[in-house]
Image 1 (cartoon, rainbow, N blue to C red):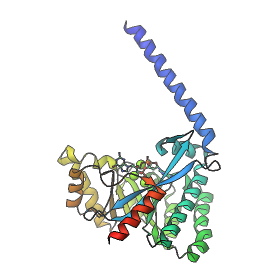
Image 2: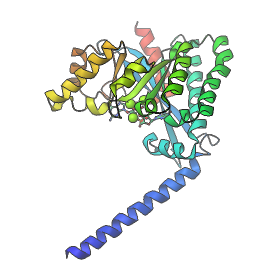
Image 3: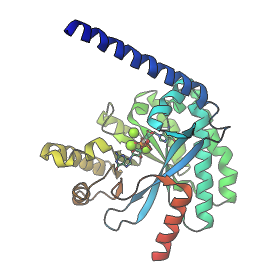
Image 4: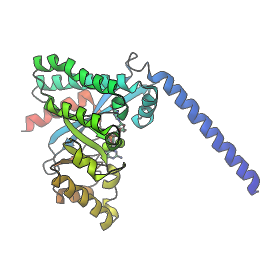
Length: 286
Ligand code: C2E
Ligand code: MG
Ligand code: MG
Ligand code: MG
């Protein structure tokens, strides 16, 4: 009867919660040793010109191979954020990405790399100072490798822009002074007050894939993208459309004159060596 079903349902629900909690506790414990155990790797997802298909940029995406299985960053990043370990992870990611830039530069294959930054990395004044210091300590390395900062984009989210607006604006200004570009990731999904875009020193917006995936669902959804596009143009921001999977979506993006596209329609994220080979192949074709 309904009552016993209800209770079983409740038990099942309870067991699920218990299981999730155990899983999170396990990951929480192990994520701290992931760097020293060499369990992290960076994947690269090309960002292309929608008309030519040429790779103009790539997003750096973190992968964690734990007990022989890849765990999605959507699962472990929040856990790393909770433990604060995201700060070390962030520095590991940036170092690794800079090494990749050096490697590409040496082969004359360099394209700009776009790196995700967690809100937690900007949480306190100390962390903000640490963030900037990291780049300044790298300066010598940059210069000896002739690695220009303009090959780096940092992807931040709208939730970051909501907090400590003055100090974060200041930090972004400092980063941009060094040539680093700032991109607003997952644009439109957050608390999006349009005024943030106008007030914050940013260069680019990435239209979230949830908008792209609704392109075929009618004019109202398309109108939303058109609005984001015209607003970005008015603010002189460049645009990346994220999560383009179909020809239909691509055609719409082209109609909007959006200059850069990322999505499975072109490429999935790939391992470092595969990415370098792909760039080499592209260079040969030109
Ligand atoms: P994101 O920054 O919005 O990255 C884009 C995500 O969309 C990636 O998922 C990418 O694989 C996925 N994607 C790209 N094109 C398509 C498509 O056509 N269809 C679909 N369904 N998905 C597509 P991924 O690699 O699983 O990363 C998830 C999120 O984890 C990222 O979202 C980002 O917020 C976070 N993340 C990844 N790497 C890092 C990192 O190094 N540091 C920090 N703080 N966060 C990271
Ligand atoms: Mg991103
Ligand atoms: Mg995104
Ligand atoms: Mg995301």
